Length: 179
Image (cartoon, rainbow, N blue to C red; front, side, top):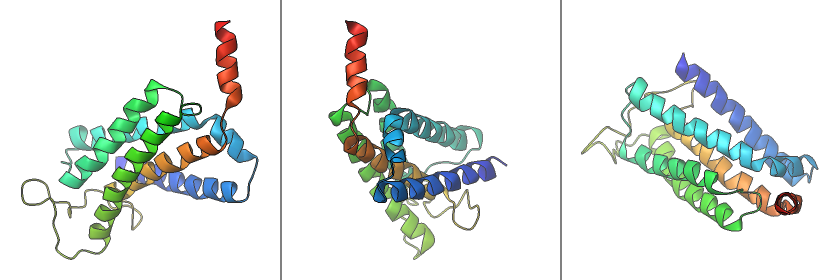
């Protein structure tokens, strides 16, 4: 049951990802609203991913393979650094989230490739759990690496939107609060 709920959530995130890209390409004013709420969007997605990965490991007993660990390192790091500042106004935080997302995303892409096109290449199986083991396979394509890739794609897209549509009024409102 948990796998189905998470898989539906991932599909909804993928639909939102495509929708946000479409809105950005068509220069919709809704992108500015997304930018305004980018901090909350990213925090909720990455905290959800962290909680989900911990449930998979410690409640359901799915051991992460080496490639999953690399993806988790990126996701956990982003989840932590998102609470150090406001991504809408902090360029360094935007860069950190994008860099961690790209690094984890490349591992996730590789993990998805060896999962979708099994060649017998088991990068992780020598000293730990096999990266070819599918603990989750819902709707014909949702696996744990696909979940990770979806989350990490948000980690690239949302900071780029926040950078493209900076929130000057956020910085101005914060300075007014202190005066």
